[in-house]
Structure formats: C-alpha cells, structure tokens
Image (cartoon, rainbow, N blue to C red; front, side, top):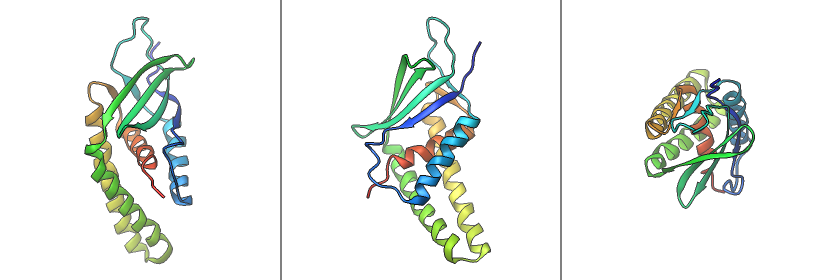
Length: 160
C-alpha cells in the first residue's frame, strides 16, 4: 500500500556553521510540521513497488542541494541533486525579510509586524513554488511540504 510521506528528516549538520535561536526555532517547527503532515512521492518507480514512507537527508554537496531518499528500513532509494543557483536569491531575500520580521516582533507596532509578516509569507510561498517546479518529474510534493522543505534548505545556508 502506498504511503507517500516523509517519516523522518535530517539535515547535514556539518553544513550548518551557525544559527540563532530564532532560526533554530524555525528549524524545529518546520521539521515538526513536516513530519505531522506531508506529501512526498518520488516519481521513479521501484522494481518492488515500494511507495513510502521515506526517510530524507538534506545536504549541500559541491554547491548543490542533495535530497537523499531512503526506505523506512534505511535502505537507500535514490538521491535527487538540484542546482542551487535558482534558489540563491530567494534564500537571500528570505533571510533578509526574516531578520526584519524578528526585529519587528521586538520593536514594531502590530500593523508593522503584520506588513513584514505578509512580505515574509509571500517570499516563502514563491520560494515553495520554485522548489515544487524544480522537483517536477522527480518528486511530487504538495505546497505545504514544499514550504517546510524550503525552510530547511534555508537553514543549511546559514553562515556565521
């Protein structure tokens, strides 16, 4: 029976040089939400018909995003590699707006916070669609799964 979802997700901690408490909280929430509800269906058919659940390891290798997919029993299935060039600007924009958002939470009026949060969500949504497009034909993910995966991809790009 098909079970197209992520059962477990890990990040290559060697890639993450530094992260603030705010970013660590984003990471925890993204992982929790991702594991609670996601749709993740690699498009390459397996000879034995295996169709989930999956374990996912996200890393950056030689400037490319690597999504290593395993079966629930840890047997490797495949690694999807995506160029990161298309994500550089959205990641940079997302970090900039997140910084503004965290500052606004501490110092701004509710109306100012709402304005910054709307911009943050807009960038996040656009980036999730960009990720879905990049994964097209490789992995079928729903919008919410793509949003959470984009958050985790951003965490891998934090530099001290």
